Amino acid sequence: MRRSERISILTFFLLMGTLSVAENAAPKPQQNSSTSESTAKTTAPPSAPRGKLLQSKVFTLDGTKVWTETGFTLEPGQHVVVSAEGNLRYSDAKADNGPDGLARGFKDLLRKLPFNDAGRGALLGRIGDPDADQPFLLRARKDAVSPIGGKLFLGINQTASDTGEGSYTVKVEIYAADGNAPRVVARVVPSIAGIDNQLFSKIPRRITDKEGNSGDMVNFLILGTEAQMKQAFTTAGWVKVDADVESTFLSGAIASLSKESYLTMPMSQLYLFDRPQDYSWAHAEPISVVASRNHLRIWKAPFTVNGQMLWVGAATHDIGFERDQRNNGLTHKIDPDIDLERDYLEKTLSSTGLVSEVTHFLPQNPMQGAKTATGGSFHSNGQVLALQLATSGGVNQ
Image (cartoon, rainbow, N blue to C red; front, side, top):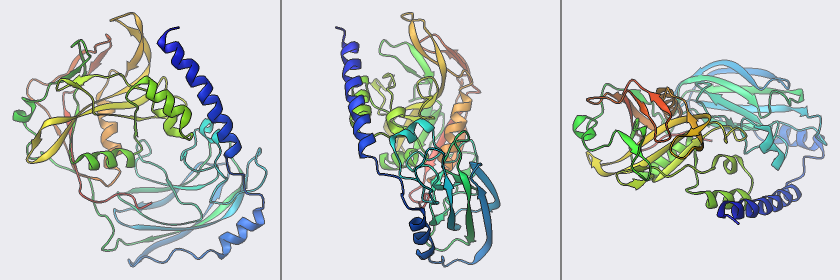
């Protein structure tokens, strides 16, 4: 029996056992809607922030919609104070639920919920660019601090094909930022000290496979500590990917089921600075991750920039499958316009409030087109994204 077959059989039995345990252990849905209504009404509203009240409005969220635009445009550091009540009823639920949502079960994974760590019906918020922003949990009561500027949306944690019957009444108050609120804004700057052609003389333009075949283009740099780098990616909704197939199967089968168990499908090891990547990160819908996901590999550079730790990476977007021209096998096909993935990375990280400066640098003799190690082609304007991470800030969730 081949090694891959042994792994697959082990995975099947472990995963089936996990599904059974998860289903039996999942908290039961709320059984008494009147109890949840009473709790919501008697729970004290969030204490008012110290800043000045700027805007206040009451919204009715129709259970047949996922997202509702509020018309509010936030500035970094402003408080969003939310109080919500009401009920929804899903066709397969045993009881009504309020803005706290139903108890989360493993089937929520298959529904591709906007916020997969909460159950259906939970009240959500979203700020900024709809292509890059990350939903955050509001529930019935919340005081959230906006790390970025942008339009505020209210949402219900459900899919467009599985909506609830009913509505929520949501009061939203916007308060001015106080002195303790994070005010980090990702500023676009013409240059960042130390990001220059002298630095790029020490950085290979492309990563390679184990045999030394050239692959993806190096298209981003990050300045900051390891802890800052990890916080920025996780806050932006990126998930750390397992290093190899065996650890992926075991974590997916044994760990509690979550969106991460889908996203952490393995990335092949590629090389920069004569070693495999230090981290792999993925960003995708959980069900479509096999064929399509935003993903990247990142290496700690063996040198610093003005005393700061430097991270060097290559980001691409898997959009399907193609033939691996090295061995005639099956491999992921990347979007040939790799600048789109570089820009997606910029949007997602900048939206966290953990990036202070952003620039794009065009090295001498820029890389503008080539083929990957598997035979796929890509093209670029040659610019490399550089991000300076901030020492503080972020969403207060």
